[in-house]
Image (cartoon, rainbow, N blue to C red; front, top):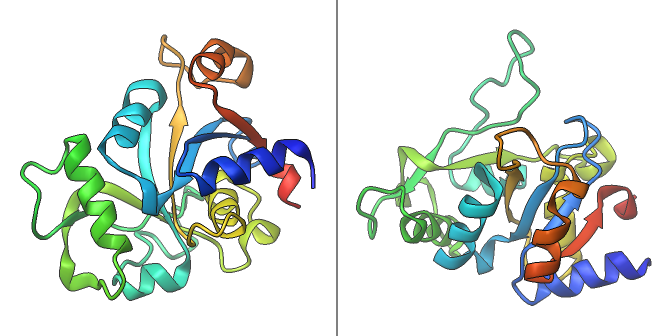
Length: 195
């Protein structure tokens, strides 16, 4: 195991956010990723502030099924290739749903042992992504990689990910965020290290 991967697994296990690179399906876009079980308001706010992309809940097909979440567009026609499920919100304990605290609450409800679709409403402000059944071997993208990292770190089988944009609104590359990585002591992991 590479030192980079070991460091990323340790960070995930400790509830920290890491940077994922090497998404072959999205032209090199990079993402923040963390274990969903640790996604508190501070983490959601960090992703919203420094990532600026859509904050998504990465789920295995089994977990999505338990929550009653299916793919928005399961067919082959007019398919973007992004495996989005319907957006969700916690049924109880949120106000407008969009605050960092409300989104963290929705994620916590979705992660709770024994939770089901009855604990959620739609539409909402948390956006589930449903991983390919074969994981990164089938789909080598940030969604599957984040779940695999979380699994290997012993931190569950769900993750929160957020794509990272530059200040000018273009999608960031790793060289664009070197200062951010240094300032927050972020660990970087490449998806290829999980092969």
